[in-house]
Length: 140
Image (cartoon, rainbow, N blue to C red; front, top):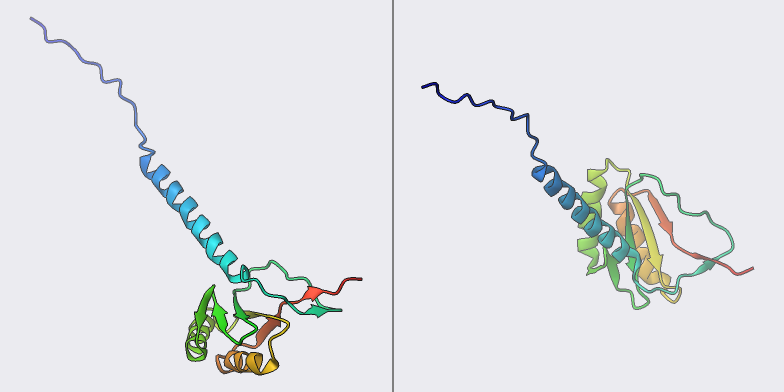
């Protein structure tokens, strides 16, 4: 008796499960990252007005946003920080980006300059030379 001949017609298979897993991880990462970046500017502040200025450019410059509330409290990344912690974190971030870090300062219009000056000094001590103020345009 002759044994049956089995034709192996199996082609090459491609398992896409790992690719789907990676795709879902990337989606979750970008959702979380966009949430964190929105937290920096979600603090309700009554920004000062200005007659002149420039619109922010959406370039690839690394930046952090420091919020100074009317009572002098300082926030970085949506969290309250003390001055010494702010200095340490700014030094670390500036070192990560080879001294090219930009600090965007958002301060309430009722904040006295006595609360803003130490933040600017902290930026200078951390080696940051690019600090900008967020303002609103004066109505025409």
